[in-house]
Length: 83
Image (cartoon, rainbow, N blue to C red; front, side, top):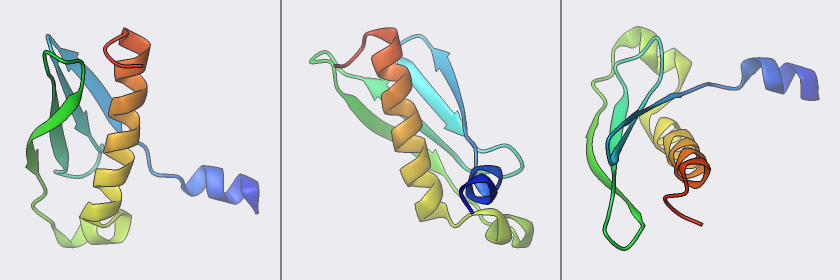
């Protein structure tokens, strides 16, 4: 069962643009932008989640937000933005 869960795990892409991280989910219109603050925190600046019928079957938008937050935090740690 664990292998099946890994195969089904949704993936997000993180792109760095200056002091901003843009997280998207390929195959959907979902995206969220996180901004690095002066006190080394991440703050969601904007998001887009127009849901089409094909996207509903892939992942609900709240699930995407959770995946995006985890991915953005991991990238921010990798970049040394946060601890």
